[in-house]
Length: 178
Image (cartoon, rainbow, N blue to C red):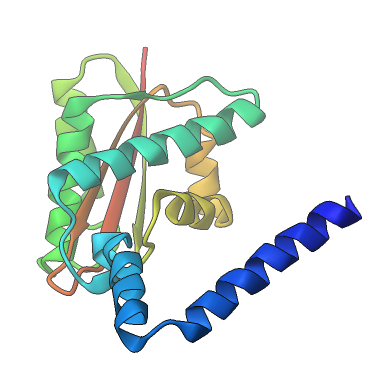
């Protein structure tokens, strides 16, 4: 074990020596490569729909992983709910409404009329997180949001919208369908 740690430290020192001896031109290339691998929203750019869908899927993965640890059934993604979540996230991102739950009752009433058999609903929103893991951690560490995550729900919709400055607005709607 000690030998492995020493070898890793030696490799790290070798890399630092190479970097220190590199020309400014090489360091700029390395920096550009690293910057190019960062998520778009970190640099104030809008997420593409593909990036957004990937992050939404990751959020569902982390939520279901958490629910499994609590002995709860996994939530299933529902396109109708996701569409409603997207409308809400976009309205918050565009500053048409404040960050929060404005219009919750109307959203839930509409969803309950579109998806028959729904008897319970909840919603989590967030702003400022830059990854799926971060937003789920924020929700899990908030008692009200955690209660929704742990609630008796079986279908969900998740959506993320980018504001003009690249900040992200998240909405997750939870429904229980009999």
